[in-house]
Amino acid sequence: MPSPARGLSQPERVEMSSRRLVEAAAALIVEKGWEATTAAEIGRRAGYSRAMVHARYGSKDAILDAFFLHEYVRDLSPEPDPTATGLAEAVGHFDRVRHLFAEDGEFLRAMFVATFEAVKSTSPLRPRVQAWLKRGIDKVEAGLRRGVRDGSVRADTDIDRATADLSAAIFGSAYLWTVGGQSYDLDRELRYVRDRFIRDYGSPPH
Image (cartoon, rainbow, N blue to C red):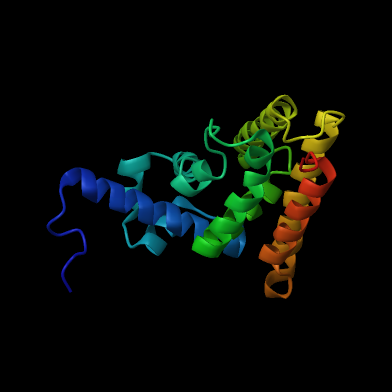
């Protein structure tokens, strides 16, 4: 069988191999967790030798860094949209999780499994997850504060409380879905809490 990399330029081959390794890492995170996964297993799952994985990344932790730099992870917390209201910016976090759920539910599951594995203080995931969560929470807070200024968020909103409410709603739903599997309708629940969030914190229409 011809190699899928045949005919690709060197940068294209590097990009393809990196993507396959990250996708393999995501699948193994779901199956057995990050700490129980080895770099050699990731390489085998992606179809590459251990030597190639070592040459490309040097360490298992470098693969983890690539996982958190994946476009799916970046897309969950993009830069603010100056054309959107502050409220739309805040509730957009629900929409982006729902979009990734529809686009690649298994990668989303890997992200949440990694997030929950980071509860251990000794986990190598912990600092990466903390940094990722802080970026997302800071953007939710900034969106809500902008919403108060532009009138889309109620002026009497407790911003800290609303930020914590949104974060807990997303990660609470994510935990129930990750543990409950297909019996838990993640998209439906995220739509419900999104609508509730708008009712609770959005300014009434004039």
